Image (cartoon, rainbow, N blue to C red; front, side, top):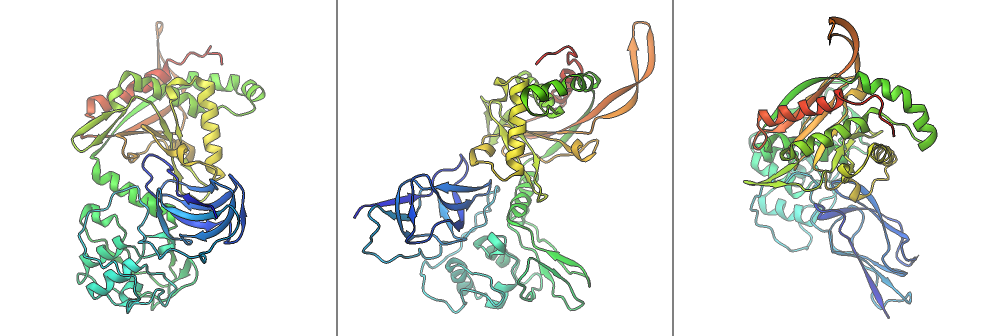
Length: 452
């Protein structure tokens, strides 16, 4: 009998693990080559993995909600549909919260035994406690009630090793009450509601104790979904790692507005898609990065990594209210039509949850369009491990002084603010300010006779 091992493939340069979210096949089912086999979630994106072979699924080694490392065997196929070994499920692997931010290293002696401990596998509210979490709790004298009260940052609110360690660090400094069991993601607080204890992994970055928040009668309690937890971790990590500075410039984009109005219908008929302001703005940013390549860097300890490629991340709002950053690879090698198609394609994939892991990897500079929500400016947080991010404000008609050889006069112009946040460890005010000024210069000098 020949068997084929299905391994968790590499899904991006910084992705080392994934959570199994759903098996699309059951043990005993036939699986064709490249047929969707399993759905997984990383700290970047959810994805459907195809089978690397054809046969009958005889073993599933990671159950739903378990975390597998890249390269782990997650399933076994039989090419003749038979197996002398009964289907088995791998013992629950230690579950860690998928996070874009590294956790502080804490040495905790943990037994590797998988024997049943005094703490049940499932709590009274239905929470699942992994063997690693139960072993730590037993060794440190944490009761089942205390585990139940810890707000988990793992998949579906699961308590992770980091949550337990964070709880141990703060244990005794604040009261913890058991939260009443709930079967829904949303519940309404009553006058007797217990305190909600927030203990996300982000506290480890700042070495601070997060407050215990008491809900008031009638308050609605909403558990963060998986993506929102990841975003929260990533944002806190970025602010902690990089000293943020923001410079602002106002740009006159009247020529761009008039040009787009003139060509947008023709472009739509010819290309079958809309041309927005975003590709034009990205083109100006790419030109400025070529002029100031030290904006296109990353920091590793005391080493500066100067990026060869210019890969522009574009922060995109999802229907769920969350945010994701697909990346336009080698944007400096694309013309305006190419950038437009890349922007539209990635935005559409993001909205329809069709982004691939490689679509959100490798960004070297990020753009966020706060103007799409009617905001005139913002102070964006750097998307690590990059060192800068540009927020594009709303384009508005404003009165402005117009200088001509015949004298100055007041006219109506289309203007927008550019907000440039940068990492002051490696980007000083001069470089950060000159860069955003150069972007504005390229926008203001846009040729209204441009043809595409």
